[in-house]
Length: 78
Image (cartoon, rainbow, N blue to C red; front, side, top):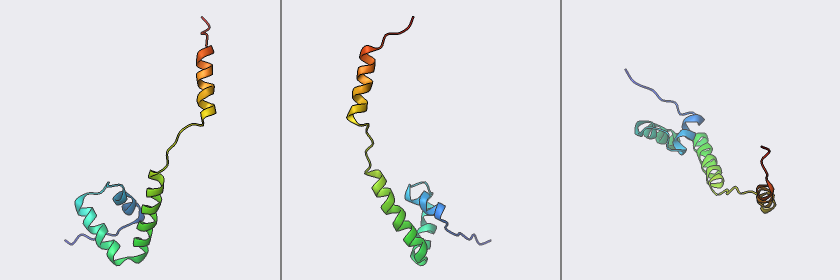
């Protein structure tokens, strides 16, 4: 029995995040070679992932100051 494989966008995203098996990798890579639309989707996702990986989240300085001020002045109600 011949197994067929159809790559979906979900498979491409899993591939991008290294969540696929080596067998799936081979099938997805083959699909990317022959399906220009799927390849464009992969390239767009890779670009987005690269941008997301560069984001550094940190609170504004004023928020940190407010937290420190609150903790300095905190008195538990016992």
